[in-house]
Image 1 (cartoon, one colour):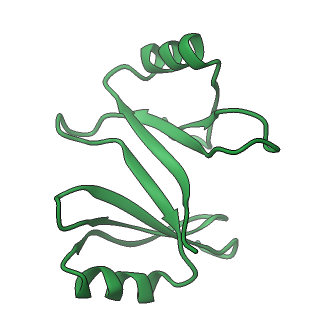
Image 2: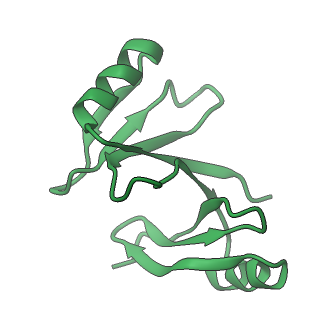
Amino acid sequence: MNRPIHFEIPADDPARGMAFYESVFGWKFSQWGEMPYYLVSTGPKDQPGIDGGLMPRKHPEQPVVNTVGVASLEETLAAVEKAGGKCVVPKMAVPGVGWLAYCKDTERNIFGIMQMDPAAA
């Protein structure tokens, strides 16, 4: 079964956003690589839940995005199109993690799909 594995929160002021979520929920943040992208740890790995990321907002209407883990990015993209959705950001590598694309469902919601592949570059 394909399950949510990651979320992304856009923020106008990332430092302010991180302070908010740390204060309210106790989430922990760490910068990922050189870019302004912050990994979010929402709790212990032995408890249910997913972790995510927080990043600078790129445009005013940028939504929170949930990403679903899939076995095959290409097969899932085909299934999205067949079901009436569309790909809005094509396949891209997340180096050392996997392959990612963003789609829109029939209700205009954006979601990500990720095929894990440590060799992605």
